[in-house]
Each structure stands twice: as C-alpha cells, then as structure tokens.
Length: 248
Image (cartoon, rainbow, N blue to C red; front, side, top):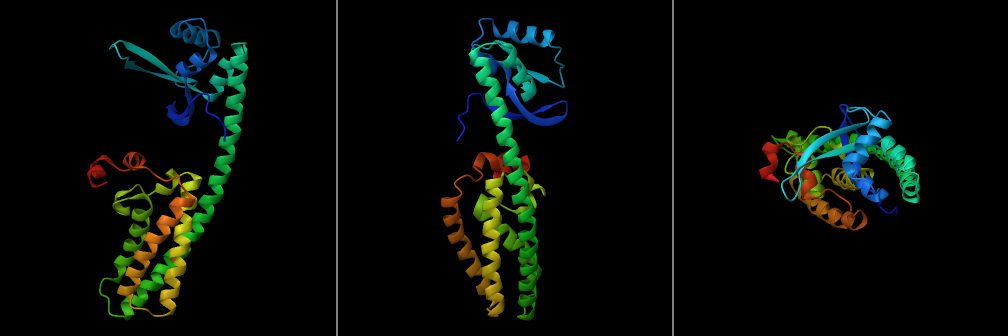
C-alpha cells in the first residue's frame, strides 16, 4: 500500500471537482527556507498560475485567531512546484504525485468495471423482485407493490445504515468507491438468489420477506469481514440532505 506523503483531496477549482493538494502541506514537505506566504505568492507570480484554474484560496483562523489564507492547488501545479524546488524533497514529492495519479487512474478503471457489473446485477434483482411482487399478488397481497421499495431499503439500510432510499440522492452509487460498489453488488447477487429460490418454492410472501431479512443480516456480517471499507456515519451524513440528518 502506498504511503501517504502529502494528503490529496477532491476540491472545487474553477467549478470542477478535481484532485488537489493543500499548498501549505506541500511547502512543509519541501522544507523550504522561506515563509509560506512568500514562497507561494512568488511561485504563483513566477509561473503565472491562475486563480480559479490552477488554484483556489480561502481564509481561516489559526489557533490564536489570526486569519490565514490557504491555497488549494491542482496536482499538475503541485508537480511543477515540487520540480522547481530543485532538491531531494522536491524530487520525492513529484514522483509521489506521479505515482498517485497512476493509482487513481487504476482505481477509476476498477470503479468503471464494478459500476457496469452493478448495473447488470441491479437490473436482474429488480426483475426478481417484480416476480416476487406478482407471487404476492397471487397470494392475496393488496400492497405487493411496496416490496420493491422494501427490499431495496432493506439492502441499503443493512449495508450502509441508510434510513430510506427515497431520502438519498438518486445517484448514490456514483458516490461509492469500487470497494463499496463490490460490497453492494455482492449483497444484491446473494439476495437475488435467495429470492429466486423462495419464488420457485412458492413460499408464503410474508414468510419469504422475513427469510430474506434474516439472510440480509447474515450477508451483512459476512461481507463486512471481507469488505472492511464501507460508509461511516460521517460519510452518510455528507451524502444525505441536511433535513434528513436527524434520522440517521
């Protein structure tokens, strides 16, 4: 696993969310002899970096209450600043950013694969739930159409503690990383198989739902051992609209 030398975040620069670095963190790593303000302002002037394109800034107060300006720079700018520092720390930082970009590209490719597979699995699960709904109707259910929502919410809530899918951004899956997508897709495959077997056996729809609910608990415990990285409560709060945070 790659050691984190300088933290890379996603920030909005020029209206786009891109990988970025806090210039102060880079300055500390480079061990520059100049003060941060002198160092960053001179670099910006010398290399004609543009605000809103190459970097963005914001003010914050330090522990003593003094206002300071932070500079958030793109990875390309960070690589250039590391290179022109012309010392061993600069060389190490530049190579670190290059390696990070390669790793991020690999992760993005993995994400695309998991996202595509997830769409296929999700479509098949929806078809299976629809077959279950038809079975429930045949058995006399007058509210069978709610089972689509119930099964979906069951999966989301069990895995990620979400209170209700209707309260979550419709593009939720696009916010998950490839490990979380794999976590979710695996659970949906297992639930689909369980449902198909219950439908084939023409089991009572009420009992079937309880069986699936219990199975989901077992699956969740199993998957959390294999996929330790899943959404934390803080990550959930960032995804949900503020008016729903009380229900998390």
